[in-house]
Length: 246
Image (cartoon, rainbow, N blue to C red; front, top):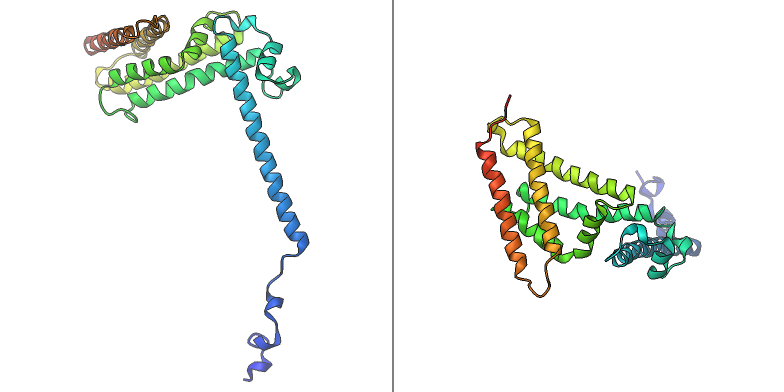
């Protein structure tokens, strides 16, 4: 068969340009416009997140020695460098901002301690690892923990409930891990929860002591952490001989 007579192989009958659709100037402008729109959207999202974080940070500074209930939305907005109406683009109210502060303060601590118990970040002594994380977090974020300790019994109901919820989650997660660790002891769920609550209470007391350390005596921190470790070991020792009543 003569190739020139077959449309599929008669390449000489068509130009390469007929096989490729060129990008017209309009298409190029559209691509640039779309790219710029994506960049603008990302930039707006980044600016919004920075402003939101700034609101959280300035609030922590404002309540360093005050309660959350004592500050106003206007005061927070002024310190953050925005107009009061712009505040509502990020939070519904000061109470909502306070709830977010609770989450931002507690979630990383719960995650790190949970990972330590489950062997994700520490392969050795779980109790020592837990105490080390607790000490480091309080040392690095004292304003957050002062906020939690003050507002735990404070006047803002939503924040007080948020802290209580976080502590219940803390206890619940520890209860689940204790059940796994004491599988051979046939403990009741009530006794597991009681033990978890004792451990969480000991850690809360340790936080309060760490916050009261005199900066002129930083060596006191180690004394407090060593005592916290002994307290948790004493609870763990009691676990080894305790038998649940049926």
